Amino acid sequence: MCGFAGFTGYLENGEEVLTNMMNKIIHRGPDSAGQHIDGKAYMGFRRLSIIDLDNGSQPMYNEDRKIVITFNGEIYNHQDLRKDLIEKGHTFANNSDTEVLIHAYEEYGEDMLSKLRGMFAFVIWDSEKETIFAARDFFGIKPFYYAVVDGNLVYASEIKSILEYPGYKKAVNETALENYLTFQYSVLEETFFKGIYKLMPSHCLTFHNGELNIKRYWEPVFEADESVSLDDWVERIDSAMHDSVEHHKISDVEVGSFLSSGVDSSYVAAIFNGDKTFTVGFDYEKYNEIDYAKALSEKIKIDNYSKLVSSEEYWAAIPKIQYHMDEPLADPAAIALYFVSQTASKHVKVALSGEGADEFFGGYNIYREPHDLAGFQKLPYVLRKGLASCASALPFRFKGKNFLIRASKPVEERFIGNAFMFNEKERSRVLKNPTGKYNHTELTKPFYDKVKNQDDVTKMQYIDINFWLIGDILLKADKMSMAHSLEVRVPFLDREVFDVARHIPTKYKVNKQNTKYAMRMAAHRYLPDMVAEKKKLGFPVPIRIWLRDEKYYNVIKKAFHSEAANKYFNTDVLMQYLDEHKEGKADNSRKIWTVYMFLVWYEDFFGDTKQAA
Image (cartoon, rainbow, N blue to C red; front, side, top):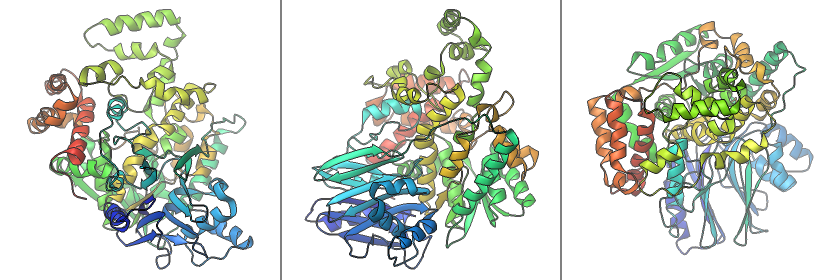
């Protein structure tokens, strides 16, 4: 596990530039550093030592040193691949998974990607071909950013490294801001920094003679198999999860596990046979999962380490957290992940976590909406549309108003993922200079088109895998853990687990009473009913309460009157949202938080006082 940074082309002070880029991500790899410089490629690496502690340093080379790699992640089937490659005549110098990638590239080229099981972002420089080959893992667990500057490829594990490259001129991407207001995360391939892009999950790139080519090498596909019984699905899920957890435990250092009160992390913790779990809670009764976690840890005979986060600690950490995030993220749970990672990093270098279970097995509460709307949607479309128009026109809120509006729309119009903050009309009102790009359905339509013959729940899962999982869930898991030099591994997000999940019929994922139905039954084998059947919460954070407190109201008020707020927003509209919330007239907490997180991020990267790493 590590961070990398680099660029192609010759720079007179290239070694100094590369070192500066590497220094920005020391937190990703505090154990050691390495560089490869040959006048045509500059490759830097920061290492967090997990596997083959003595010999796994990077950059790493093949036998004749013509191929060099920097790699962030873990390849869980590297031992099997190593055996195959040895049989094909390859010679290995160490036991690292990194060297397996080098020889797999030599043997298979781009086709190597189909053989990998793990989380990864890597860059290979083929000096004979003078070509960069890079790839990002199937689900987007590990990050990869790049820009083409003056005909050269500049890349890194974090955006802040690319900002150190002298040819790049920093500027805010206002189109990214506009769409962030709807999705609550950076949803476009172009980041909040103009000209800097994400390499998307299951994509690879080549760069040769100034020409960049990007392609998708894998696609998640759902194909329900109705011939398998519920009991058999439960058995298959449990078998796949045990196998995945065993592979995710491969390490030369101790592995712990995050633990909340929910079924996902509890299931992983119950079957991983480790010694330590880690939990955080907040100083409000309904927002504290510590008692749940301690009780489960006692039952499964694992030590639990917990931290109660005070309101003051939470708010004080926000600027540093947005700095580590690289782009604005308005998910309040990111800060909970920051503190649980901080707690875990005092005891272990690696922790397992429960991300991905909801997207694969149908766990989000919103996935029950197709069941809830089914009766109403039997009414003629014209009638439904008319009722929704009447409800929308009424200036006051009433019970059932949102139901009528949502029930009038097909899933393709009403669902963009687990967050929907500002609609196009609202963001045009709140922004000083709206660009009008893009309507949210323009972004999701190409993905809905790929699953047009699936049921609504499966469509929602597919959208979340391609949007919410990448832009929110995995972004914060990576950035918040690496801020504390902690490697987080996600056993649910495994190709073998997905190969089971993708065949499960919707009736065994979501019904009127439950979500993740079959997966919960598998978890029942190891967990008490109160945990296995617990409603999905995520990381509960008391944002709604804080924003009605005079102290934190004034913090937001000051931000809403800042120079940055006045540059991008109609501040009178922002204050209307804030005052309505404080007075209890509406729950605007998530909208307020979305704008505030952008303003904190802007101050970090464009303000007068920049955050230090």
